[in-house]
Length: 182
Image 1 (cartoon, rainbow, N blue to C red):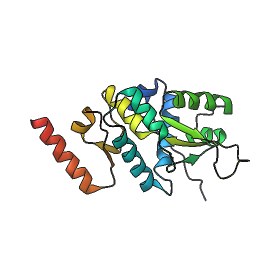
Image 2 (tube, rainbow, N blue to C red):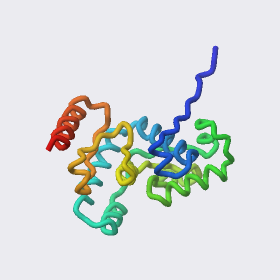
Image 3 (cartoon, rainbow, N blue to C red):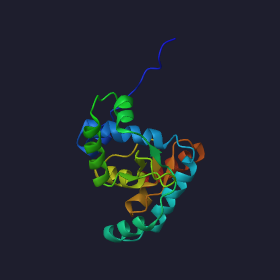
């Protein structure tokens, strides 16, 4: 029986965002896994709540508000070795760590230790979809798979929806078309 083949995806928008294809591949892999967590629906709801709570504040106030919200959904755990194997980048643990540290410093990832087992040294990561989408928007891109109401987003209110909802996609598409035609 043949082994299941691996796939690593390089997305232009993430390369532009991170400035490096390796960071882009790692970020994309974390986004991929965040969409497959058991509490994905709760993760999306949590992101929407974060967006609403910080919608009418300046950048500094928004950062402070978002720090106060407990992030309890959407966490994944991957070792540096797992990330290297999955992405086929062939990077050492320390190299993966440096790239992830950059993603953390830019606010695109959150990191924590396992809150339920203190002896677990494997970090858990959570992708900040709002921050990624906002930064991509500033660069003229969007995060594939996540739809935003552009009118609300331009007013700093990132209300987003995942591609899996046909109704939401149709609603967003018609709003976007109306916005463009106006």
